[in-house]
Amino acid sequence: MLIYCNQEKLKELLLTVSETTHSRFYVDLHGSVLKPESSPEETVSYFQKLPPLTRADISKSHPDSRLYIPKKDVSFVSYTSGTTDGSPLVLYWSPVENYFFEPSIGTSSRTPLILHPALNKNFGHTFIQQCRQANTPVTPVFADFQNLTHSAILASQTHADGIYTTPTLAQLIADQIDKHYDSEKIKLLALFSESLTLQKRENLKKRYPNAEIANLYASSEVGQILFYPCKRMIDEQSNEFHFLDEAIIALELSDEGELILTMNQNKAFPLIRYRTGDFFEVKNKNTQGQMCSCGLTTPILSWSGRMDVDKLRLNGVEIRVEDIEIAMVQCKGEIQDSYQLHFYPIENSDSIRIIVEVLESDFVKNLPTFGKIELQEKIKSALMRSWHLTATATLETAVQKGIFAVPEIQFVSEFSLKTIKSRKIVNHIV
Ligand SMILES: [Zn+2]
Image (cartoon, rainbow, N blue to C red):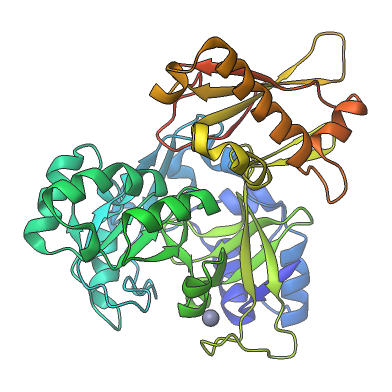
């Protein structure tokens, strides 16, 4: 489904990759070229039939073979290690005239502390450009996500009033901020690269009482923050987004809701129908020119997760972290947010085994044996009765149908999958 398209820029991009002598990457991938005399309707229809670009298409090709500008004009090169398929990704970048992003996100924050792996490594200097070319310029303070104490001292000395980070790092640095600075001085938490669940929002609101929480969407293949909330969305604490239409040529959602982007911000390697692996829904198609209270009339998107990280599809059932969190609220007093669900195949059976790993906090450790058994039963029953896999079916229903086995609860000193980003669900079924 085509959600947004700038037809003029689309035609220009498709002709460029059809006619250029720099690279044959898209001509080979598409198996065709766009004819210069095509009408706008023909261009859009040609475009929508093109095979999408996957992360694997990029990582398996040599960066030189997909370079669309002379090598001397490459501004910098980024390297990211894969999160899902594990293969590294090397990307060439051109200078970008305007990123169209406003780092203050409509808040009063003017000195954000930058504590984010991608911004601390590859994209620091392009983010400085974004901060300085904004209508409301801000002064970024580059911290170190691997040294939270120094970062908190830096925040204090520079009077930082915002933090650009991930939900997990925001939570991790809170103690240091309290010790070396003052968490009440933080007016903006700009969070991305992880799902911002209700539980995480709630925890962060407690740690940073004066902060407006802005949930953003970015990707290292895109190289910039692309989706952002307006004031209404921040106030409502929704997971809705506006998108930077000036930076995007076409935005599509697949039938399953996967975001497919076409962009030419990076002239060194434009993205044509890039499958991001991130899932969204259209909240408001704005077909009648409906307006958000901020004045924008473009469609509003809402986050529905990253495949394999925030949701899984198993035996035709959709497993969503959000649904699990709602069920687990009942056990929050005992286990907080410290659990991880693992899904395993069962030999000679179509049924799926669920193991719930629960971190052994001091509270759990000090429970007598029967107390531990009681707690295991409480977690099991919360999942069985309150985890809704569909509008009508709970886990209990799915267990009765043989789709899943009754979950097993294990107390562990550490999760069997440790990652820099927090993970609630882990799929072991291939
Ligand atoms: Zn708005």
